[in-house]
Amino acid sequence: MGEAMGVNATVKARLYEATVTLGQELLVIKSSLDTYCLVGLNASRMPSGRVIFGHVQQLCLSNVALGLAMVFEREEEGGYELCSVSGVLRLAKSTPIEEVAAAHVFADKYGVKRHDNWITEIDEVFAKQRPIIRRHLRLVTKARNTRIAHLQQVAPVKNLPSIAAFEELLAFAVQFHAFVNRAFLQTHAHPILTDRQVADDLGTVLTMVGVDDVVTTFPKMSRRAESSRRP
Image 1 (cartoon, rainbow, N blue to C red):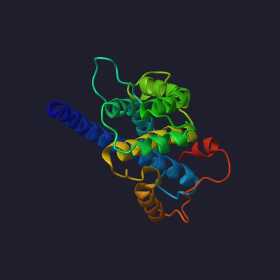
Image 2 (cartoon, rainbow, N blue to C red; image 1 turned 120 degrees about the horizontal axis):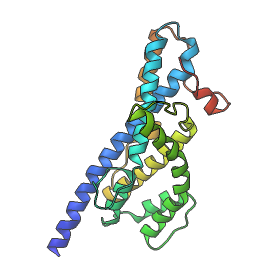
Image 3 (cartoon, rainbow, N blue to C red; image 1 turned 135 degrees about the vertical axis):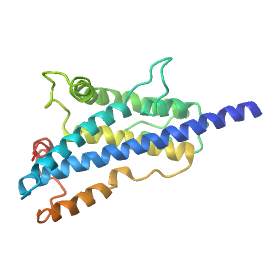
Image 4 (cartoon, rainbow, N blue to C red; image 1 turned 180 degrees about the vertical axis):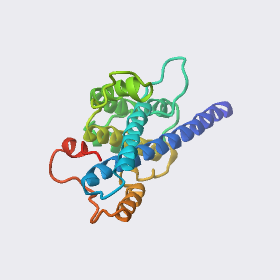
């Protein structure tokens, strides 16, 4: 009994560390995505600094793509343990759940009915989301492998997913992260999707360089078209 409790404690500690690391990466991705969009929304109204802001924007785009590729990286049998979604899920399945209701709330967001076994419930969520994740990540991974991680010729610079696709990937990972925090660690995750600390600071900087009435939201048009604006 004591040995089993020790094993559970060790797994829970690893789950805690992996969940914290995942949350930190998700916040970096959210901040980078905010920066990319905010610069694009105000690019035509910048009286100066377009080159440096354009450079920052492209760095942020690379950061988003690389970050999401890491967040959704699948663990390989016999390979390294990852702090990705799949790595956290593996650890969660080996940890006694504290609040089953959190699993029901997470599953309900994706149209999955309640099961007696929470693992079956969560596996069904991933089964439903996997085709969407795979479709978006195919382009992310291609860009990472040919341009971002390795400087290759004829790299597909413009073949990344739309901003809406990035947001969809991020939203799922954040919801999963919140579920694990509540269900296993009995904590409330940081509200990553509504965190605007970086965006607000950037808005202040844009005002300082002469942008009047900084635009912070997309107009009612295609997000793909709007987000493609670059300095």
